[in-house]
Length: 246
Image 1: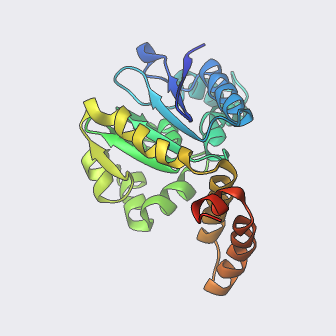
Image 2: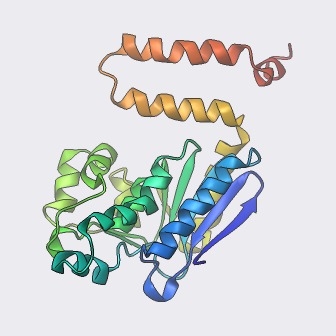
């Protein structure tokens, strides 16, 4: 299986490892990502997920031969949805997620990075949508994710105008939280994931859900009402009593 998992404290590190093929989202690799996240979510000892790539690439996206087969009719066009699962499973996780982008994140691999709650870029990171450059329309909810990550102008610069970003440029526009030397990338990403994992798991899960809902909430009063129930719930939890010495 081209996916490796390693537990560091309460953080599950998921490394996609098909380095010879630059970690393309093959059926086998997608299945490995899904299985790893399913197992992590079922384990109450896991508080956060960290995903990265082996070798010199984060993820080179879909296998172009598979896409060509869809275009020629040799493979069902709907099977592209199977590729989507490689990053949608990350997006759907209720746990805090960190992407340690260690090299090129291309096409669907860019989507894999976008699916994480937090992106830490190494100096070797390259964010390259490349959909239009190979003659296909963006997919997998890419435009929605990108627009929310960087805003409409930057999204247009990346998708329509073909701009590729290194780690430092990604950090400047907010696509990545920060850019760090490659040798420090995994440990730096792990620091972030460890802080998230140290929070009571249900509290983190509820807060992540609220953050996602808040983005689409039109007014403050509605957001206040959404938060109120969960905040009142948190007052009655043992970790709050412990923190306040009650």
